[in-house]
Length: 291
Image 1 (cartoon, rainbow, N blue to C red):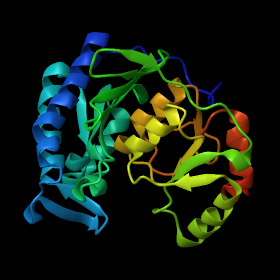
Image 2 (cartoon, helix red, strand yellow; image 1 turned 135 degrees about the horizontal axis):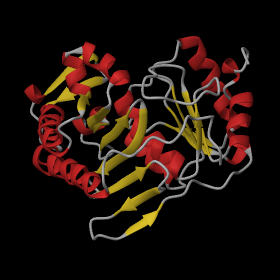
Image 3 (cartoon, rainbow, N blue to C red; image 1 turned 90 degrees about the vertical axis):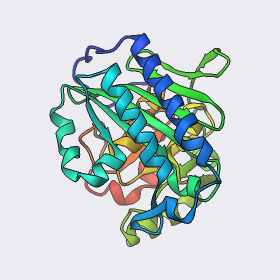
Image 4 (cartoon, one colour; image 1 turned 120 degrees about the vertical axis):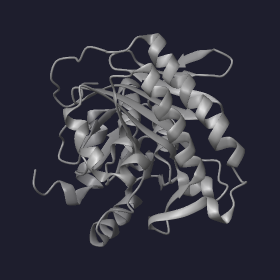
């Protein structure tokens, strides 16, 4: 299904071996820094960043440190953008749009879940070349498997035993039968109230507080839609590419293509363009008035 208009394809700067090396690095960081601390965090191992629901743990910082060091060896020319690195130096994020090659990493997506012993979290990474996402990886430490996509190469689930299978979004269904996920925490209160009311028009909407989990549900056919309001690149670059390569239609609320430089404008994914348009017209009514 055709996505919003795009410029010409970007040349992939990494080989499949390089992508496998990044995947192995993510797995190593999880085995060394994340899993040993799951349900074993001390009080001093967890801190608030901006609010009580925005947490960072010793596992986040440890995993990012390991991944950053590994990327310096695998792709020494790449700019490294990590969530915790940006928290320490916000100016780092502005460099992404001008980078020839960048690796964007969320060491633990779903830190709130992880810190509370809930096994819904993941490790996310994307490779960006000249402003285009060309590869996305999401690792599930609990299941020990990966979702991996290269631009133009499909989305694949790769298991610990070495087997793999191609991922595909769900077939379209009527609006009242749609299952999906909605992350609305960063919306203005009045918009949130309207949107949550409109969610009664679909069959079911949930939030797992982890984009890594929600993108997996979408790309594997387990949900028909997702939405996000705040667009930090480490949360969405890997999942959007994986969702698109699995056949989904994904765009910002105004219908424009999502890019690594975008931090707002909302994000909506659906199995195809017709489903996307129906969701925006009947559920995301606040975002159709200027169209």
